[in-house]
Length: 135
Image 1 (cartoon, rainbow, N blue to C red):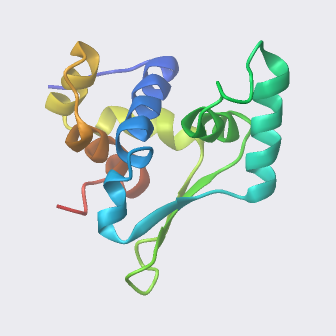
Image 2: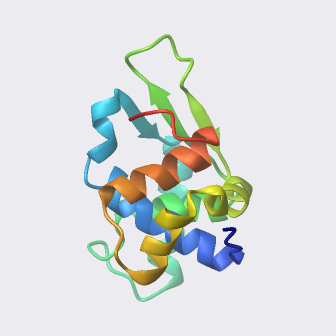
């Protein structure tokens, strides 16, 4: 089975995966950490705060991460336990290209609203490493 997603759908699934796996600390167990350029983070957050009726409290971490990507920036997983061989950096184009390469069962869980942290983990691994590399 192959699932084709629009850019908007891919971004929505990726955002939801960030909330479920990164925002909850789920992926910290692998010895990896999601990092961003501090200047890009500050610029993205400021843009979110000024572009809508948002308040400081209503802009969450994952909103800023997505804004970084939309502004042309990158997100990086840094491998703290290995020799850096698992470091991986993505841009928005990678989200558009690789979310739909996630296992179809996992994608259907997102589409139907029955996803969990394991599904989120699968999406993030597929986008960052083009396959699931952590069990």
